[in-house]
Amino acid sequence: VYVALALEWSGILHCCYIIAQIVAKISGKPITSNEPPRTTVQNVFFWARCVMSLALLGFAFAVTLEALFQGKTTMWKGVPEWLSV
Image 1 (cartoon, helix red, strand yellow):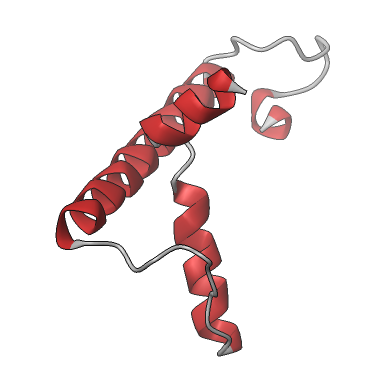
Image 2 (tube, rainbow, N blue to C red; image 1 turned 180 degrees about the horizontal axis):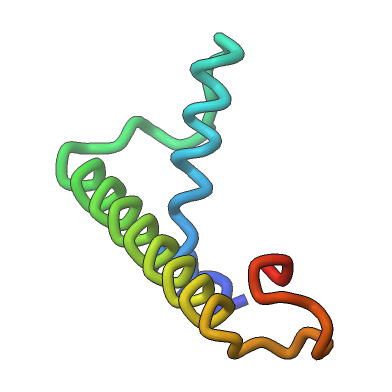
């Protein structure tokens, strides 16, 4: 439980909240919560964690693609690098 709470507090996975808000806006349905509305400080902290999460996701994606295109993959010998993406 404490590991999950630490991951949630760190904001590493907050990019999922951005996707949820985008889907809610597209569908036209509001996101309901039992929690009170966030204060300004909480909003700043929330969006800072979202930006950090997107930056980490982008970095991980770039590193993964770079490694794949350099041939650093565990795919079979006959599979080209572009196909292993």
